[in-house]
Amino acid sequence: MKIGVFSTFMSPLATPGMIRDFGRQAEDIGLDSIWMGEHVVLFDKNTFGYPSSKDGRIPLPEGGGMLDIIATFGFLAAGTTRLRLGTGVALVPQRNPLYTAKEICTLDWLTNGRIDFGIGVGWNKEEVEACGYGWEDRGARCDEFLEVMRRLWTEPVVDFQGKWVKFETCRLDPKPIQKPHVPIIVGGYAEPALRRAVRFGAGWYGFSRDPAGTKEMLRRLDEAFAKAGRQRNQDFQIIITPPATMPIDAMQEYAELGVDRLVVNLGSQRADRVGQRMAEIEKLVKMVA
Image (cartoon, rainbow, N blue to C red; front, side):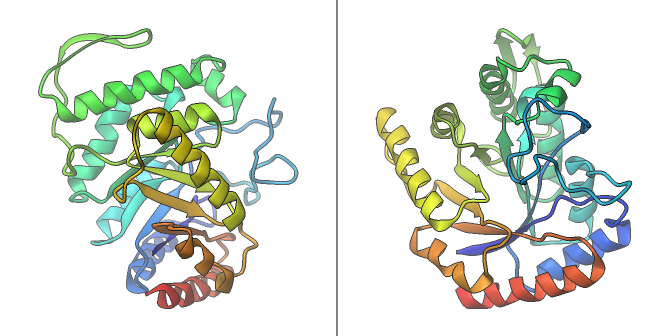
């Protein structure tokens, strides 16, 4: 089981120096990857609350906000050589699919194939609508956008006629370094998300899942594969971020479930807390080595 860290970098704590040093330290202690979540804008009032907090709000430093995943990964890539960089998750149905395809394959090109494209449909209705898209049809739109991106990454010339995207004799270069394309890691717990993982995914990502919840999701994922007439094989990656309160010494259970990559939540980005947490994560790396 490989160990990564989840850290959605936030201003004002995540300065250029902090991010650069963090990337180097992550590589030095043997971490597999760094994962970042995505939100373009946030709102004082939401129809649905953030599912990973008790009050329904994303915890932010006072006066701060979330850094952009693409720009931050480009910055991290320049200061590292081995770390994989994963979006956890990119909100595909509120993104322009052509721009997204270009950004992700460019990152893959510049990092020599170190990008994992974690994707999801999102929970923030106001954010989806502010980006110019509808809320109710975001799942179908996500599937169409993924198909567009997959074809642009793998075919020299693409014609596409969908509900949201239409073009003829379109070329996107350079192609990704990874073949057949950048790995698509599907997040989400509803049946459509599991079907999406079977159709498009090189893996499935569960956020804030304890071992019991992980075991149940793997059962449901295997059912989704069976319904599609397929079987989950060893190349299909299971990636889990445990609950932030879970003790480091309890995380060995995930390896017993067959989890391939454990992405531990960093938590606070205050300098003193980062040092303490990274020492704990280094202990976990040595435990599973």
